[in-house]
Length: 400
Image (cartoon, rainbow, N blue to C red; front, side):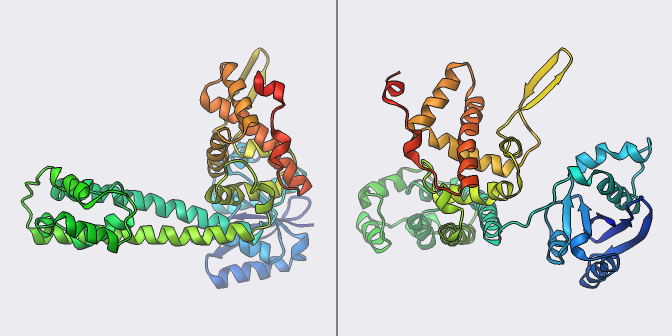
């Protein structure tokens, strides 16, 4: 039986193959190219069938992991911190180099394979949701930045356009900035013209042209030293950047909604109280892969960051916040858990009881979160949808 250690990198990799006695039977460098990876997979095939050749690597995702799984290898991910803690096995100096790390990884797999879980391939639909929701988060951050930049620009050169409508990224505000990109272009604007403009662009803000014009005129008069032509160019460019990002967000929302509807896990969790389409997509995309590989509720609570870290040694006993966790999964759950207590009497009761015991809001949310996570875990194991009627408090509990 052979054991493979793969020390991965951005432009090159190192691979070591050990036998059951710990002897090195092969060692080679791999270029991060198609030819390099294909040759590495072929060379590994000379040491046995892919299904019998486990590969240990310090990551859970990426091109190399996908290629190894596609080739039929069992991939054993190990956290870099866990592997670093084991380095004294091979010398007190903890020397580090890529070929040596590949050898040590393979040896670590040889001695501790029974303690290291293999990476289970995640459902493609889950990976797609994860990619879409993460991309949306990135685009949203860029959109917020673009709105802030446009706000700062208008505050300096065109304050009226910044106050006339409630949100700069709304369709009506974008249309206004395209039509009136500088103060001069709106200097002769009348209430009747503004009314016609709002009707043409389906404005739904319930403000008359007179009210909107009053907002526009009440804004401070700019004293910009830039020409009106340059102000118009600046405003138009920044408006188009913001509008483009908003359009991408709207398109992603549609894709995410369709992906959630078609996902096999959605039916299990769609009835959770006050979970929206986007939040449900985030939970499935971030917590779904964890559910697919964990073997116990305690492991699930730890990996999603809802369980604290307990340290007990002699007379010392501490319970601390868990920092090392999947932060995206925790954020997706915390967002929904905080909302759930506003729609579920049972959740509100659990949260209130935690606060009455002296827990602060973040602690109480985690306490409620572990209760919700047990329900999600039960739904997952039994493949049954959440039934909200089973979590309603009894009349005497509600009165208390």
